[in-house]
Image (cartoon, rainbow, N blue to C red):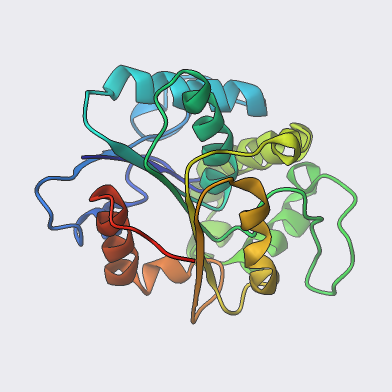
Length: 241
């Protein structure tokens, strides 16, 4: 079985090390992918276009594919891009068994700030002070990174690039429906956790959702639970609605 992991905004191929350690099933081969401009691909130019990001992931998966079944898991930005990646792979007659998504309520939803006001300007273009507040609200980035000039100067452009991919690429996924099952997971404290079942509108197959205590980066608190879901999906266990 093959498991492809798609990172969140600002992430890289090391972002899921905490999760990989919890997957004990030796039949599952794990591939943590990453977009250019970070991690092992730090010498490459950052991707600023959603379609280019999707095609980059598709190319990586095609290069790593064998004849075994596979699944795709993405958190936050990884879920958004992963959805379109699945559609591309379906069109190439090599569909995954399952798409597992977390920290994301699915396509077509508007973005709101902490005051429940709709965000109508690009967050990636905000001044550093405001952009850091956005990152603090999402969580997952240590305060020392935001306050340490050299660290922020290194990670800031990567995170901004990923936000730009999401915010300027249009809602191309709104018009997509995939044929493989979707398993969605969110933190109960996430602003749109109550909308998690939005995902079921984008698959013709089975859908299952789960909420766990925590905020946007609840995944760090529940690696065993997420690993268990991924292993079940990789072993083609039926996930009922």
